[in-house]
Image 1: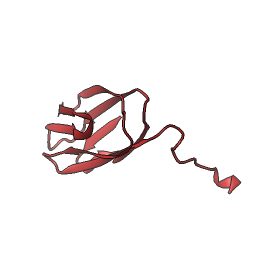
Image 2: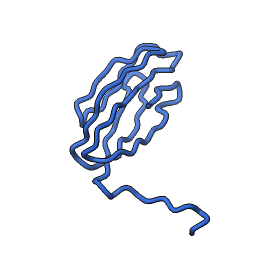
Image 3: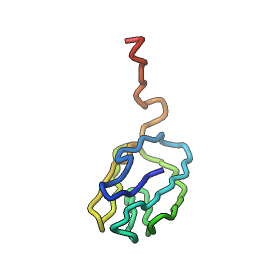
Length: 97
């Protein structure tokens, strides 16, 4: 889930794996801009989002890298980070460091 708020996207960075299937839900909760766009050009995803409504789409990333998503009406932007299989950073609990 990606929220388009009055202060930008939440989360602004989304990490996913190459080769897996995702359903992305974009929700416009920006009360000042009730009709805005969500654009993820690298994966040819472009949608209108309306206040309080969920816009869902399928995403099957086939390339690794860092890709921008944006809302041109509010100048909000975020990053989609696509990792190769087994490449995502491993988090170690602080108790084991």
